[in-house]
Image 1 (cartoon, chains in turn orange, brown):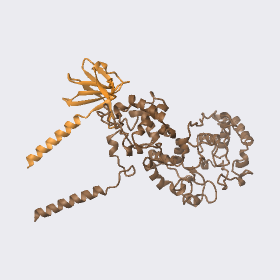
Image 2 (cartoon, rainbow over the protein chains, first blue to last red):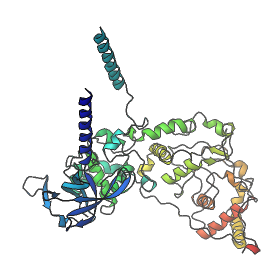
Image 3 (cartoon, rainbow over the protein chains, first blue to last red):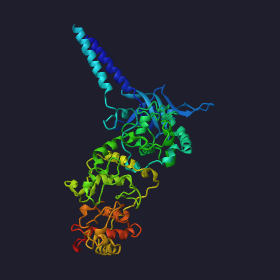
Image 4 (cartoon, rainbow over the protein chains, first blue to last red):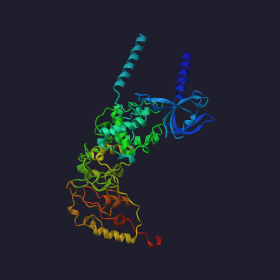
Length: 114
Length: 414
């Protein structure tokens, strides 16, 4: 019984940390490093502002949302961007995972270009 | 037998939990429900002073042209996060840690006052408390004019389904905290409807002025706005914070510092602003006025013998002494006949006792009083008859009438 409880508790802890690690990070783009394939964001959460370095991997997508050009369609469609097209000052939201002390992005969504 | 008792215990516990859940008090600002604040960029804070008077024109909320203009701006600037349907589920918004507002949520929209809404659109998530919560909302004040921001608000408001103007008297929920504070701290003197007819009022200063303010009237004594206009929110905050100095009847015994209205300086500033928003809601004039001009108080020139002498001459020429007396003791020839706009006798202020100046005794306070006058009392505004330099001369003279008043520096100090 106690073994079962220990396994269940460990599972819950792992699930909790996994969910926490996948929380999106939003912030203002401060710096883009094409060589290192990273993006530095100024992000504020729970009253604290910090600089977060978001790492890119080969499959990471960067998208912005534009109005559909199709006749009769008014909704938003995704438009793919490259890391080089991201500009300091833009507001983005990164869906990232915590891997070996790094924030590795799956998708970066542009909230505002400015 | 044992398992039956256990089942009975578990069943009773479940029933008790269900009963407590059903009977829980309704969520409100007053009982500290803040759960929904953590889920979105919404926070129960009053708009700061620089936005507190930014009330949207009443007609703009339902003006079809304004709404159409707002729809165009919304589609380009806001829909990517807030969604075309106003549900807070735009494609860029769904990935944000702090969810964009859902304008279809009637209760949430009803809690937002127009000045708060305008502040949010103007400053976005770049100001506290939203910045600390991680809001990604952009500030639009640099890109949208005041009218464009109003237009966006008018369009966003349509998602809630509310058809009238978005004003506090249509949405009492937006004033819940202020109303509770008013009921505890103000109603005794100012009355349930803010007409200055509370049960304690007559005992404050029996059959004499000052009487508690009637918030529904257009006359507010203590303002930085020109004569005949309503005060700014900052003016009201100053009065609530400082209280009103005056000797009064039996009910004022014990009020510190000769105050007929107590100082609420120890009440948190946010709560003072909440109660002021409630007070403003009692007078629609705050929503009907457009441009607000305030009287600037220039830097005080140094006190010199020449200025004091000139101030004394102005004091005589402007007939201040008719009410306040030659020595400023409030014993001028007209003093016994003075009445306020409620036709109750009013005393001319004894200028030798600055601790009893109702509108404050700092040089800037006296300057402001002379510029604005005290609405509803015989004290006129001198804004049209004295330029700022001469006004300061008069201020220096008035403040020199008290024993501890202003004096020019002695020769050795110069």
